[in-house]
Image (cartoon, rainbow, N blue to C red; front, side, top):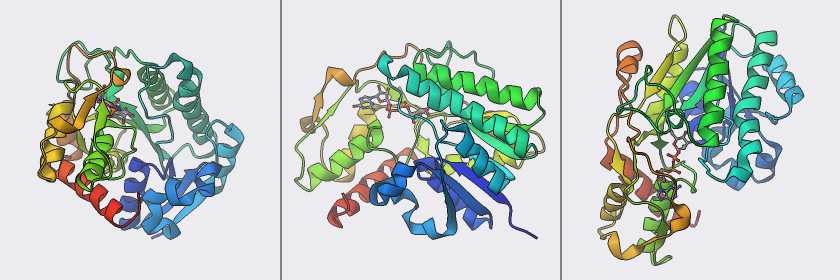
Length: 328
Ligand code: GDD
């Protein structure tokens, strides 16, 4: 039987790279979209796919250029498409509004409308976010919880989520959306709080840094393990019918708990090494963002595989190894 063809936008990001590995293991022909500037700086921008880049067919494209997406989809004719390319940092800087809307909403529209024309049978995954719940009315949140986004990021993701639903309901395309809570790994970007902490812990342990500046230590998040979350995405596209699924661990922890756990991996107490910088503060949630993944457990047979402690230890140990090997 011919291998299934999958197209991944943002293949060099955390989720794109784990998903590409999973699909390769399962015998897929994997195509990935990357921006031209990633090819110009492969040591950094393609680091996540370094180990298997030769098995992924890379296509240069920009999702803000509908023609480039049209050409890629027309050449690949994917049977499954996973759409990750977007702006992923939750910024409260209103100067970023236009670019966030362009990368999260307009680019999703370009991709879906192109798939409708060229590959209407393609099964598509859209990456929604717990930020769509924003200032949530209740915890934990599930697929029936009302959305109440309060960042441009959350608003643009929610608008794209409604668009994805529309392509499913109106155009009868197979479009599934994950409502994903925070998911972390050694491939997480350095601007996110978990990686910021684990990379600082490694530097402090090796005497390369003295402290780490952070925002609100009492902010809490439902943190899971990224490779588990890409398994859920793949399972969504194997269902008889498309639907939306919350993917989360169901347990939330504070930044302070993350810090304590990360420093304990190297035998240190966090307190002397943390400074609080108000510029990192964001409006805090009155109701915590914590997900209820009951539907995914039932319909996808999905469950997280890693404990919080093991996730944190894996990230710290990976950052230590990278520094010791001169990679960072
Ligand atoms: N980034 C950052 N830096 N966050 C900090 C800091 C800091 O110095 N100090 C405290 N925090 C708090 C933030 O206020 C937030 O409550 C929490 O740490 C997590 O922040 P991030 O790691 O930046 O992630 P996020 O929750 O804003 O967004 C991530 O998860 C969403 C849900 O899955 C991103 O991956 C989004 O793309 C994703 O949609």
